[in-house]
Image 1 (cartoon, rainbow, N blue to C red):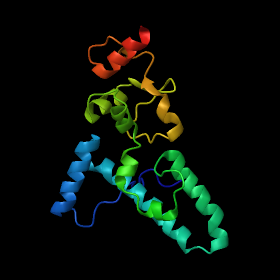
Image 2: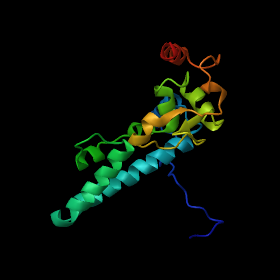
Image 3: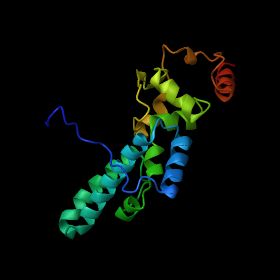
Length: 181
């Protein structure tokens, strides 16, 4: 279980943290996806490293052992939405951190038009206005599987569920009004 006084890091700091190119890339990603800080970005970078390491380990295995493990690994990544159908281990090795950041609940809420900006999406999620299949989710970094993507909507008890709410994005107001008529 581990010592509770020494929690395990879920991210790795960069070797050269003051490189200008790295700082600019991180800043662009933090702004584009509405992340709270660079630690969130580094946590997803660490996850990407582990995924790519597993793919390299699978490539090093003998063909007989690799077949089944490779299929399970790729199916898991496809279920999470990181890879398209018919992907191979080469596609896993060419993944970027954007593939993971696109699957965050915060990003999907913004892309579906439920929020005006990525920062607004984060606030809606943290304040409990977003639900997946009627279940309230308050973690903006929740990685949404493909089968749950269509089930994301405002929480039933949220004031945003009212089509006439003044802060609700206009495109959704127009859609809900046309459904009522």
